[in-house]
Length: 191
Image 1 (cartoon, rainbow, N blue to C red):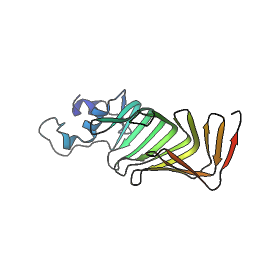
Image 2: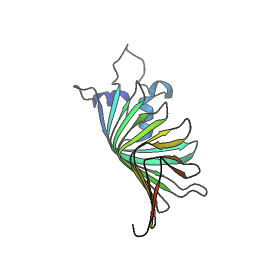
Image 3: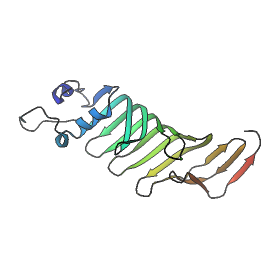
Image 4: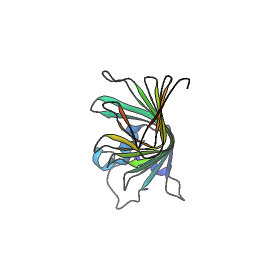
């Protein structure tokens, strides 16, 4: 699909582009068209491009080199071309097993962040699951600068009949180490 065809699908009133079942390759082509060669020929002057792209039923994949590091979906999502901000509703992300690390899942009702800064926040119910262990909290923040996931809201971690609760946490995804901050309460027995 060329940019001119994409412009034809633009909603005139709010200048957002609504797309269903959109591939990330096409998103990259549209979002970064000056750098990847997706053009329609000679420019006829300054053309208005919508700063925000909106998506329904977005599916995405994340690669590090040729390795698939994550894939997921969002019921609705938006991307600001001018700032790199993203927002999404009903987000589910799967991290494939890698080496000695088991497959992991993270879901959140709301997600937001900034792609260039590589910072993301899950809100309104965050659930992470890996190898039978489940961690739930209302909010979690990820910063690529240190690679840690943090939360200042109450957290609960369950593994079999063992449950730990606390007022905050830090998770190191590489070592799979969850640290409960501010005092923890551990309970054993039936879940």
